[in-house]
Length: 189
Image (tube, rainbow, N blue to C red; front, side):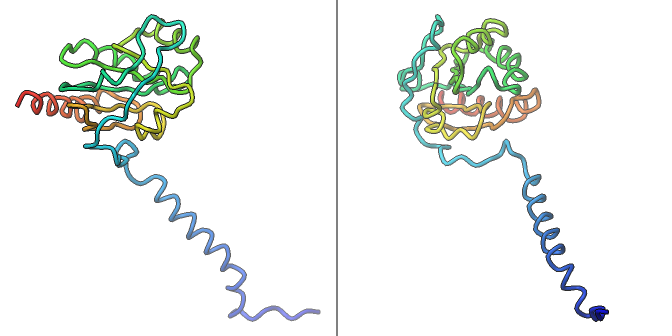
């Protein structure tokens, strides 16, 4: 018959469980802390990457060229894909935003099948003045994209604002439009 462990040594058996639960708690706090749409971008204030992307294959919408971002002016750039469910949710809001003629909206279609991208824009409408097909995702990396959808405000060839995640009525009203207004006011001054 074995002798039971003294009470002072029994806690040693629970030590790995206690450490695991402590680490799990720390990871959970970090995972759910903060707003993912406020991820920092090292590109804020920096020039727009040289963006040369072909049109979506079979589409009549022009592709993106560096000329879209040279010179003075304000533009909105939206990175999207037909396979992205949040992109479908934000699309009607982009269509409404496109009615504002003070700035163009450009699209970067990330890692998408051309037929699906055409169908997406055909069914939901086209808010974009031009759409570049980023077939391998390299240009999205140049723009500092974490994942689709993401939306940028560009002023005078520089990235001035970045929104990570789908646009909502609230995020457009509270964050995107004020940044666009600020960029437009800076341009005229």
